[in-house]
Image (cartoon, one colour):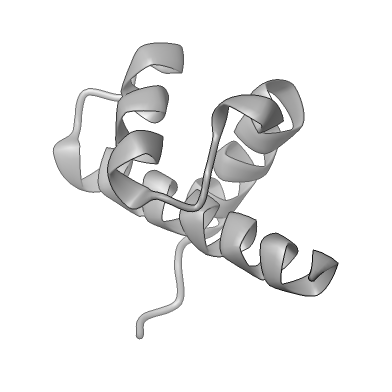
Length: 65
């Protein structure tokens, strides 16, 4: 899997800090939330942000269990 650019990680971390309760471990749901709370017009960038957030949420859920 390719390494995600720093701007994807930075934006995803900021979104998790600000809207953490809105995100879940479901990629499709996170895609919709990213679309709602940002003005990212590129579908590819939106999907990469949502994918990174999904991955972080799943690792947090796994660590909490």
